[in-house]
Image (cartoon, rainbow, N blue to C red):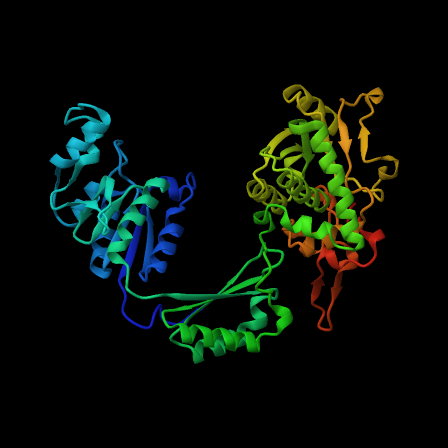
Length: 493
């Protein structure tokens, strides 16, 4: 990662942030407040200079509050405000300024209004037991009254750690700190690796020392390998820096600025546009959408998708999502996931599944065991599920015997389901054509030479995608570059 340039070309307010809580350091709770704070401050011309994440340790918190208060114009603490024994932020802030705490009469009224006529020795009174020199902020700069006042001590703002409350508080007070200046930011997305443009970025940082140039690599993005950010309060310098970089970085290394690499935000518009194309892929998308829409009409909420993170079912996830949006359905995608052996699961696939479920708001129905046994479990626990969208193709083992709608063979002991097969006529090239054309995210393993993914102990990069350069360095090409479709399952033992 490269980061160059001063924050801005003139003096701005500086902020130090202190995040408090054992739950953050132990990974029990994810800290989303810092990202919100950084973004909000930047938009308002304020510099977030330093962040400290601290445990529930009064002495350590007090030490950092005192230090930050002397270093920065504003200090923001988050967390450690509440009625329990580990809520010690008020006491810690008081210690930082060599004072004690006392019940504030105004806060006492508010606490009693919320919790009833509680006694002064009630745990709820910790909420109004604050440093003696505290001041209460009841209104924002625009005169808007707060639901609950913000406690300040000198230049320290003591805020709650609950994200919804923290975000509301920051939004309320940031107007007091906002600088009367417009900040300007440009971004450039690259398909190449950071090392491929390192010299260019270094030269740019020397020529535009008054501009912040950031370079942030991504190891899991299929389409953007590096994000370059350019920011300053001087629009002309930002634009000149951007022009320099665009001029010196080869065009084929940049992602077109009009490309949306988050296609799930398009509500299916990309799929509908593709199916109108007069092309082989467009025709196959039309046919697949027809099958899915027929299944939606027949089975409604009883329709589900077999989604294990593979490339074929990733195509179906995006198609099914588009079909639901096209039909203005409020139904969530139901996904069936059968986990056979956790130890045989790639971590990258686990991560991709989790992210995909969030992106498409998937209702996951999961179980474990062998497929037949697992399907019986699902039938018992979710009897309303009557049909499953499958990623089977004609060129898959046994795929040639299937139709768009093929019932399971109950005579052979399978539970009764209708298998819906929208992509039977697709081949390996079609799958990758669809994913790459619409910038649909897929498991990063495919970019590391895996063309077909199964159990970890039996799955390896496709030998036809692995080679060596003149210096003997191993080069692994991504799965979408495989030329011979018949070699798709090479690397599967």
